[in-house]
Length: 432
Image (cartoon, rainbow, N blue to C red; front, side, top):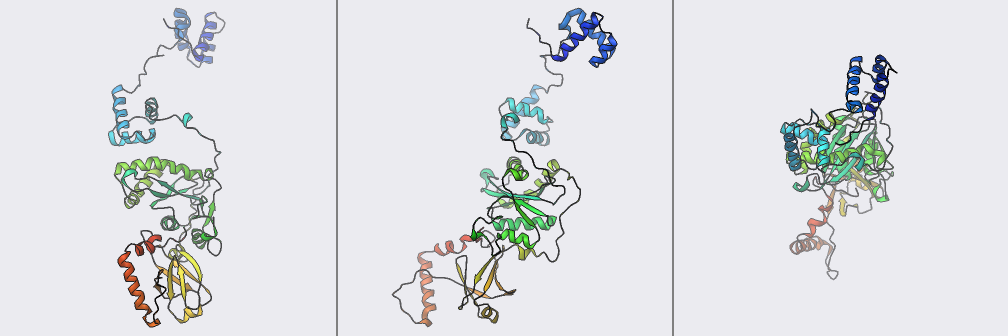
């Protein structure tokens, strides 16, 4: 017969009941020490006198719990998990089993089953380097962390792309999500504009040191030393703060990991396979996510500021560069030559700095002292026969013939040269 080992609580009962049996302690005092009624102490004393210490060991030990989930329910649940949710976490898998399959299983029970079947690792085995947490901000809109997460969001159903994530520091509430082809300045222009139109202006955005947010080389800066995105936020009176490490903006980093788990699987279940479909799917997912994970702020005040007539988003969210205008009124931008019409305003700007405004919708405006300067695009011909001599009045027709000849023999050259720096919306990317 196997030896039955007593627990610490059972050893305590044994010592006290032995004193009671030898009349060294009254039953009332034993009941107070053990936290039992006197009737329970008499029952335990009877068992002790009949079977000794063995009578105090629980007879349920080693037997299945009366509340154990039936084996057939476990087999059904784990078959579904292995078939459809093998890479889901226990919490999300339990939600899907309850919502889609009418199987009400607690997440901890499912966690134990998944650990036993090798589908999940315990927290202890997954634990990495410990980083001390930073206190949350007090109010909604006081600090909003932003980041781009490049991932196979649509798995094999669509292209690899970037999810732009805006999360409030005080509440862990996802404020805005938007899929984009890349983490570029114009992508952040579009996403930030949607954020401001929905929520208003936060006090500050908190980002990493990506070149969109921080000047990492001189070519990425405007004349005042800011990036294009930083200049746009400055125009709108919004601060941009760059974190020194990924751990410093841990809330958005943790949100990215959660989204790479949950959102990928939700997109799979919904059959979403493109950026457009993904952006249409995101509002419903965002509301469900916030209902599950968002926390109340320490201070209920919302620090978002309302947009006013002075906040011109069209003028804020564009790419700006300055050029010096020479005597012949030419201007080069993004490998394209532009010729300004010889208006009075253009001639007054000769030798001075003019500003090129590249808008996300593809518009290009050249401006000086608040006046838009009309222009035409001049296609620069790279290869000209040096031996060809012609009169100036025939130069235009000759260039037309050369251009047509190049188009016939090299049809792809022009299509690659001009549009290569434009995204789907038609704007020029420049540096960012």
